[in-house]
Amino acid sequence: MTTDAGTVTPGAIWSVVYGYTAYWTVVAAIRLGIFDRLADGPLTLPELGTACDAPPDRLVSVAGALVAIGLLDGDQSGYRLTDNAAAFLIAGGDRYMGELVVRSPGPPDNWPVLAETLRGASPPVSLDPTSFFVPLVRATFPTQYAVACRTIDLIGPADVRAVLDVGTGAAPWSVALLQAHPDATATLNDLPEVLPEAERMAAAHHVADRCRLLPGDYHATDLGKDTYDTVVLGHVVRTEGPDLAPVLIARAARALRVGGTLILSDYFVDDDQRGPLQSLLLGVTMIANTDEGTTFTHAQYHRWLEDAGCSDIQLLEPLPFTHVLVARKHSSSNRKEAP
Image (tube, helix red, strand yellow):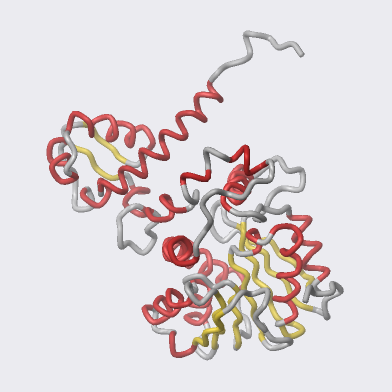
């Protein structure tokens, strides 16, 4: 293979190296509280150093990098938040993503051994329900709640009375659906360690009195048959691998009444496996941290939904870089469920 030396550049390689550095710079800024300290207005470098308990001569490189990344503005005489940082990186905000930034790659110790994991080894650090999933579902609530609210707007008027939220996490979809449909009720399913977080968020949004908790593994727990008019699979299918993912979709569809709506939120890969980058990288994240998880293509999801008796499949983009499949159940599943 030959290449024209004048057309090649190491820029793509350096972007990977610096991407790693940029990520950990933002994580350090979150942990130092840089964004929180700037929430009330600009600070000089010495003021910011005092507020974060970090020497200014060390902090200056981090602050400058955050300016270059686009999360801060200004210079040593006064750093201020950009609009994106103000919207998403101030702790306690409605759209706060700081904890999601920290937790979404999974345990850091799993990444240096990714090559071994790709060859078949299990990730060295397993994802414990209490220490990993509870903080993660708490961190994902703001973004998923925003996606759910916008999806409900795009779907438009619907007869929503009984909701099943499979692998509910902190219940962002159920909260949004119950707020939009005051007469509806929701059954929240997740592991016993996770459900208290769903209960807490439902109470915080004043819908807990319309929620029923259904603890247990969604492959083993009885989800019902022809019971609900809306079933949600919110960012859980990709954890299951290609063998169990269609089984989970079939179980969810089985719980739907004919004519009911299945909402499936995830990151979908193009059928040619060339994009989107976010979905492909998330697939690698799943491989790094789980034994079975990965991301799937549009064709796979469409086939699994159709096999489960669903049709009228729509792909929605409620917010940039987020996609949701909405389908209607028209018949019983053609797929035999695993016992």
